[in-house]
Structures are given as structure tokens and as C-alpha cells.
Image (tube, rainbow, N blue to C red):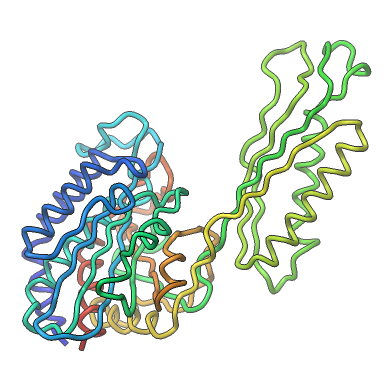
Length: 393
């Protein structure tokens, strides 16, 4: 229903939406500082005649499209924040802000949602119900979704469903993937400090070297997942930082290990934490060192609602064809604070392919050289629009 009209409208405004995306990419802003981006979003929505609410969770924006007749409400969520990464791309719209970059595609998410808003504004007289556009700050580890919910973005009118997308360079433009149940993991961050006894490097027998202890801990960590977690469960433990000392002839007194654990439920996290703690306690005690261990659990896992995932899959087939919709892919160990919305109302997030079909080179999300094929933008706009019209009949 309305697929041809959606595509015609999309083709007339794609250049405008790409221009907005490039402007946002050129001027990225970190979490809770998306002031310029928020102004672009709110002005665009006001010009469409939406009800617009600003300064939610500091920099969040909500726009509401009210249909001609009463009915259900569906929400579309887009995140706006960038990452503290120095961009290494050299295209003309590369980041102009030092050490800040849209390396996770949130500039595209924002632009796609604005495009869908403009497409759907043309269907106002055919819609029974409401479409709520949620532009969220601070997805990248700061939990902006929880603050947006606390400030009432799912109310007035109450959302009956919520959908979102995330660009994926693992898929080519023109493809999407959508799963049901657990689709993205719950992350935890750990910080381990090892307190040894510093001294002269020429007399290691008079010191307690936290570096050698740290190396032993890291080596033991590599066996925790296969020895602790069932082959039918999924988890990842990655050490991402090991810092100690700063010169040649001094054994330092302290070493710090940092990293992340990803799993799909709290019980698995508890198993891994207990095993990690046991390893650290045992090895430090054996060498006469002390330690501190912080394990901070982050977002809950993303659990896609089956009916909303089916809605997205069916709508996508109308836009890109059945063969380009990959259903129930392997769950991802990436994390997303969309999980907070999906805990409150039936919701689902899908992966929108953004890899260039003509380019075999690959740069992943969070890479300083990440770039997306902009042809994915029109596809994202069209799928979101089709989802809304199908949901509201």
C-alpha cells in the first residue's frame, strides 16, 4: 500500500536529505552537546507543521505528526551524537571538528528520519493515528535513551510501537537484516588495578611487578568464555587496554587493565564476573599484590518484538524485494540503548546495509575511515515510511 507513492516522493527529496546528512557529518557533536544538530532537526520538523518539543534530556527533540483521524501511535527513533575520533577520510564533507567524527552513522540515522518525516507529512490526510519522531542525544555509552524516556517521550501520545534502524557496513546498500528476540548484547566495562611494589629494574627480586601479574591475568582471561559458558550461549570478553610504567629502568607499582564483556543476560554476566574476579584474586594473592576490580553493567540487551520485526520485514520486502531482506541473522555483540525503548513498548531495530556494492574495501563502525554509501539513505527513508503506513493501515 502506497509503496509507489513513497518511492516517488523519496526520489524528489533525496538530494535535500543527503545535503543535510553531509552538513551534520561536517559538524559532528558529542553526546549531550548536539545543539546545532538539534536546531537543524527542530527547524525541519516545524517547517513540516509538526508539533515540536525541544530540550528533552538536554538536546533531544520530538516531533509529532498527527493524522487526520484518531488511531494508534508509532514512534521512530534516531540518535544524533558523534564519537571522539579524529576522522581520516578526505572527502569534502569530512569532519571539521577536531577529534570528533560521525563514525557510527548517526548523521545518516538523523537524516533518514527527517526524510521519512517529510515523506509521511504528505500522507497526513490518509493517516489514522500519530507518528512520533524521537531524535535522541548521547547513545554512545551515555544512555540518552533512558533519560529521554524519563522525560516522557513515549507519552502524550503514548507510543504503541517503536522502530529504529542502524546502518551496517556488513551489508550492501539495498539489503537489510532483521531478527526477533535478542538481537544485540548487553555490554559491561571492567577496570582492574593491580597494586604491586615498585623498584629498580635491575633488582626485580626486591619488587612485586604488576606487569607480569597483569600479563598472567590477561592470558587466563582468554580461557574464561570457553570454560565457563555453554556452547549454546554467547558471550565475548575483550581486553582493550593495559597500562603500566613509563620508562626503562623502573618497575612500576601499579598496572591497569580495561576491557568489555558482552552477553545477552545478567546470569551470564554474573558467571563471567565471578570467574574473572577469582582469576584476579588468585594471581595477585600468589604474587603478594593487591587489586581493585570494577565491573559496570551497561545497557540491557536489545530484544526485538516479534510482531514489530515482522512489520519491518514485510514493509522492507515491498521496498527492496524479498531476496534482499535477511531475516533472523546471528545476534550481534554490539550494544544499543534502543533496548530501553523496547523494554517499555513493542519495538524492533533493523540493520540497514550501507556498504558500497561496487567497493570491496571495508571499514567498520567506529573506524576513523568509516564511510557509508549514501544510496542507503533513500532506502532507509522508504522502509521507515512503509512501516508507519502499514502499522497505521
